Image (tube, rainbow, N blue to C red; front, side, top):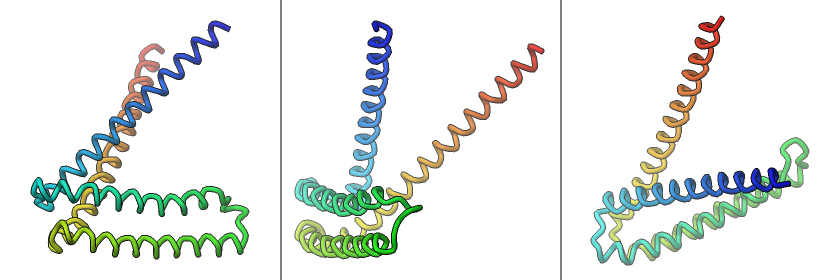
Length: 164
């Protein structure tokens, strides 16, 4: 029983460390995004003070719209989905795109009261550039991990061959 409690505690601590590391990674990513957008838009301190709460509100609502579709999609098994469910999912996706478009129109108007149209143009470009950079880094880390694993496998193989 004590071993089970110790094992559970170790597992919990390990998981909490992973969650903490993920939260820290998310904070770093968010800080990098803010820095990139602020720099690319050339936001003044006064603009930044008004821009970021509005932009964060927009981003949150956009995520919520996307989450609705994701939640429904995850509930459907692609192997057993019916024609009716497929149609409903497509309709939901179209509705979500329309909601996103309406949201973008609304916030574009609100953001124009804070930043110029030129800055708004640069915002879209900065968002896309940031996503691309983030995906490139993720891919780079994935390749590095694969290379590390291959190196460890080769080292282990060489050790085994050396012992024979």
